[in-house]
Image (cartoon, rainbow, N blue to C red; front, side):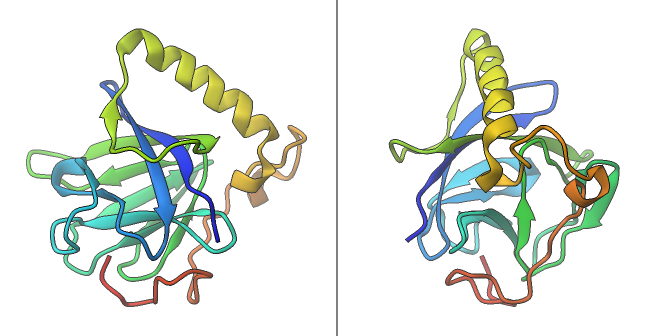
Length: 176
């Protein structure tokens, strides 16, 4: 059974929201209208779900009625397809179409979660520490998409994986 992963979504230039992603078959973390971070909402209320796959990776599953979402990593961009899980990695940038303009969310992966809690804003002075901790963890956390050795092929590291058959209970085409 995959373990929950602690992370933060940074609304670029604004606040950090501390979150925990749960295994794919559990209701949990999501993205709502305007890039709002949701928690255990009904499937119709969340635009996308964020979960831990069966192979301990973070995945984003965009709903069919969700507005456009673009995932950016290492100079690459992907229009997030509806109903197909996209693997997320530390420092990914998610742009969500919203009324009045787009909202940008930067992902900071912290590692295995010790407790499961609803998303909560991070105090401003604490957020710098969280970013530094996330960077340190990302350098050594191969399980979350890093190479763990500080090296590797930059082009391969920037690849954005879209899965047809995710290794969790989320089925392709299923609403989040």
